[in-house]
Image (cartoon, rainbow, N blue to C red; front, top):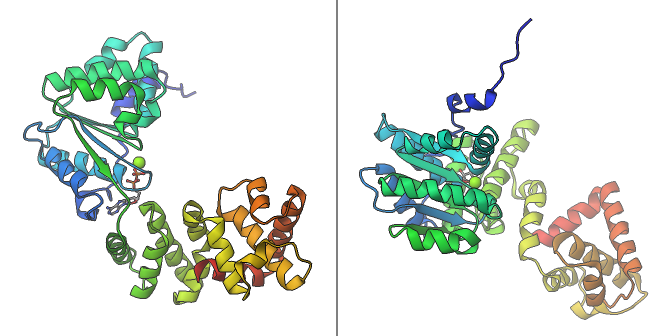
Amino acid sequence: MIKKKIGSKNNFRNKLPNYNPRYNFDNFIVGDNNNFAWNAAKRVSMFSQTIFNPLFIYGETGLGKTHLIQAIAHEAKRTWKKSNIEYLSCEELLNLYIGAVQNDKISDFRNRFKKVDMVLIDDIQSLAAKTKTLKEFLYIFKVLYNSNKQIVLTSDKSPSKIEYFSTNLISYFEHRLIAEIKPPTFETRLTILKNKRKSLGIKINIKILSFIADKISSNVRRLEEALIRLSAYSSITGREITMHRAKYQLYPFIKQEEKTNTSIDLIQKKVAEYYDLNVNDLTLSNSNKRITYPQMVAIYLSKEMTYASLSEIGKTFRSTSNKTIIKSINKIRKERANAFKIDNLISEIILS
Ligand code: ADP
Ligand code: MG
């Protein structure tokens, strides 16, 4: 019988860190949105001295924080082969810490970090509510900082919004550098797509790439996924990617994106244009089918594409009861499930 190995927590140290080999500086597209963070990351990865410490990179999700922090780790390791670099996601760090507390091994935990030359921790915001753990890390960071070891942190929140950090990180670490990554501009998005097109080896024309860059603006991950989706579509079906097919295939991605940008006003405007009505027609009570059907489509889209509540939607469409609203939503939803036509119609309204 094979005995199960116990104490696997202690084996954690021997595990390979979960780097993504693609997340390096060569694959990172620099634009106005991330230039400052990239520059700081490059310098920190050269490792010769700690000029910025800690380097704190923050920005919304999907904008390249993990890519950049791993690029630093890759580059530092490549340049300084003997260096002891510790890259951890916040979750891994937390597990280590909890293990240490449970097994009364806090001093081991602290010692582990004393031996490193550079420590990189991704997504530190997950610790925001865990003050005790943050305190412990801050203690470790102070030890590292005072012995001139590099610390790199990422977060989807600015440090001033992480309660414990706002007072302690900002005041203690005089050499800190806080760099924000913002959403990329259209040009940067297009460059990212061109680069991805090359690495995926797919045939897709620049007009379609521009369409994607135009429609998906807030998240690089989604931008890439859109292209991967088209690549999969074309390799599975053997079909060429035309603009019409791209629009149709990308509907769910664009819907997601529009949800953050779309207002009911915009939906009403588009639906009215599509059905050749006035925007006002959509908000009147009327029993003419020429108007009630587009009204239902607009109500349905408002539910699907915005974060408005049923009663908010109800107010906008002068349709007092939630029941009527739900009825409209269900009717169009059902039609979409049963017929291709309405699906096409809706995506055309959104994408026109
Ligand atoms: P975050 O950690 O901020 O949520 P990630 O680093 O996971 O975002 O990035 C999401 C995806 O977008 C990854 O596949 C990453 O390679 C890619 N990406 C983000 N920014 C860039 C960029 N400037 N250049 C190239 N790829 C990028
Ligand atoms: Mg990340």
